[in-house]
Image (cartoon, rainbow, N blue to C red):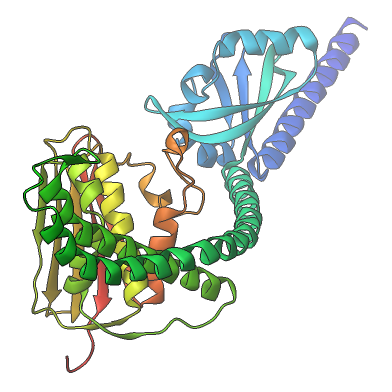
Length: 402
C-alpha cells in the first residue's frame, strides 16, 4: 500500500511538471508572437525573460537584456520602487517612459506592469509598447491645429488689412497732393526768400541755421513725396493681394532696387550701425519682377539685420551678384547680430512666428518676404550662428537674353 501511494504521488508530481512545462511552452509561444514587448522582472529588478518584440522595442538582443536591471533598460526613476508598488497593488498600471540604450534616452514606450510568478517566485510582467508613431501623429495633429489657428488669424488679418488700407489711402492721397504742391511752391519761393533775407543776419529755424534749413527743405519735401508714393504702392499692392489680382511685372535691376531701398532705409541704418557695407554689382542681368514688392523684400531683410545688432560697432553688409553657373541673380544680407537659434531656423518663415513679440513683432515680416520671393520663382535661405550673426540669401532667375 505504501508503494502504491508513492507511485500515485510520483504520477501526480510528474503530471504537475508536465502541466508546468506545457503552460510555460504555451506562454512562450504566445509571448514570442506578441506584438508588444514582454519582460519578466524578478523582485530584485533583474530581467529573467524577454520576447522578440521586447528586443525590437529596446534595440537590444536577448543576451544583453537577460540579467540586466530594468532601470538600465527603461528610463523610469526609481524603477525598483515602481515594481514594489505593483506587488502591493496586485494590479497593472499604464505608464509612459523612455527606452535607455548605452546611457542615452531613446524612443517613448508605454508600460503595463502587473504581478505574476516566475518558476514559483514572485515577479512582475512588464509589457512594452512602442508609442513613437503615436507621438509623431500627435505632434502632426498639434502642428495641424496650429496651422488652422494661423490660417484663421491670417484671414482675420486680411480683412483688417483691407480696412486699414482703405483708411490709409485717403489721407495719404492728401499728403501726396500737398507734397507735390509744396515742391512746386518751394521751387518758386526759394529764389525770392534768398534775396529777401540777405543782410538780415543769421537766425535759427526749427533748430537749424537759416542757410542749412533752406538748403534742406527741397530734400525733405522730396522725401515726403517719395515715402508717400511708397505708402501708396504698398496700399495698392495690399488691396491687389487681398483681391487676388496679378501683380504687374517688368524687367527690373536688382541692384537699382537695393540702392533705392537703402536710400529709404538710410535713417534706420544710421541709427543701427556705423558699419554699413553696400556692394552692388551694377552689371547683374535683369529679373522679371514687381519692383515695389522686391523693394519690400530688401527693406524687410535690412530692417531685420539692423534690429539684430547688439551695438553700433557691429556691421551689416548687403551685396548683389550674378551666379552665371546657375543663371541666378543673388541678394545677400549679412549681419553681425545675435543670430538665430538652431531650433528656430526651420520655423522663421512661418506666419505668426516671432521672437520679438515683446517689442511689437507679429511674425509676418519673413513670412511675407518668403512669399514674395517664391512668387518671383526664387528662393530664400538662411545661415546663422547664434551669437555671431546671420546671412540671408535670396536668389531669382535671371531674364533670358538679358
